[in-house]
Image (cartoon, rainbow, N blue to C red; front, side):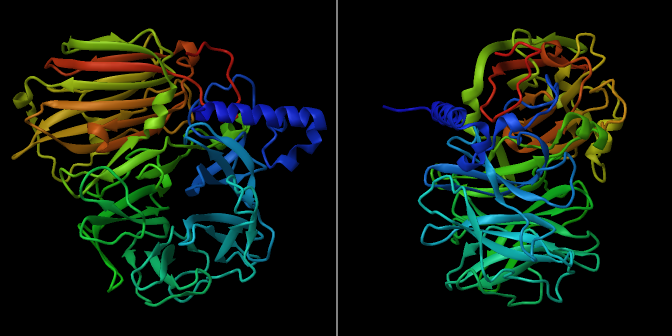
Length: 583
């Protein structure tokens, strides 16, 4: 008999609950699962998400070392267990899942305890060794506030939940050398295994004002050597590189490949986060393992030409190869846009993006495609469809019948008169500034969705498109405009934007938006461009939120097909908001 992942989680949670009722809740730590009765945030929290991952309370940032082990997905994450703000005492939170959507919170995997990590246990990665054993490498902030790299291994390999971790006796296994500053040397990547029998990792660093990813090698995963003082990847005048990632992608199809694969059928992706800009940038290129070199197709320019996973809020991302389903999964931290005081008042800060499958765009061969994992569709409930609806210039259409504050929307727009797009020289144009300053009405666009909108439209977040004609092609502008997202003051309401090519043969543009109370993740053109935003409406919360399709351009647009689903709440030990009706 096949038992659903959700049912397994429910039965396990019920067993744990009854066990602790029998024993008294003081015995809860013995189960290695977090006691939900211990954690309290204000009742009916309007901005708490319903299907995005969050711990029960307090601060969360980077996803650490996600992995799949013995039928269970593991998510480790940076967590402050004592406050809703970042500070000393950061630990590795730990949760497990059978489907990457419903989660069980466990006790912390790694906590400060030794001289080499006594201040904090910062980011790192998990690697599955050749014998199938998992190992974690993480950055410890030592008693001198230097950043050093440490190892931790599971105490009991037969436990698929890997509840307990033991720190290696030889820690720290890597300390800063002359190639990095002692306080900017962190976030070791998942390791890959070379043809020469050596493991390799890269570590984010800074030297002067140069951001670096530094390569280390090891034959046994304990004794690591810096073989070359030249960095594996470097950019000038950027400051520190954080959370580096390096992995192969297939040139054919959407399947993922193991991090150690080297062949003519793959290209490689190097990703770094620049703390100064708080953005993750990626570079597609060629890995020359014999020379320990990565040759990117394009160099970092510091302009809108640089490729990013997400052109909104999405940082410190981490990928892993899910060998159970032969795919590469990407996580990203989506931080708050409210004030620190707001976070303290609400008792939490930070969410993780919906896990995304990522692959090489086979059409271009030089950029990635991202799409929410299939499992999130299990949360879809009531469905509303619109097909073949013409949107004249200046028109707006409400998508009613679902809980618009907790929804999944897919829409395909058809542009019948693409050749009438306005001509525009987009060279040296910043798309983010264009989204902020462009006239309210153009020829083709803006058109798209008004999400988390109040009935009077005084509050709304517009996810929209415009189309321009350049000398040799059609270019789309995707925007996420938070300027009217809330009547509240003191919020970051930055407008985000990016360009993409429009296929003149198809004459269509697609959009998918995942809406979850205070986060909107949007995927344009089948996931070739992505924008995530955080918003905090005052009026458009719960059942008072509305969803609209709009067209502010002068040319008509056709809604070829639109499907909107109300999303059920995931099992993540959330504090439930009982003030509104869900699916």
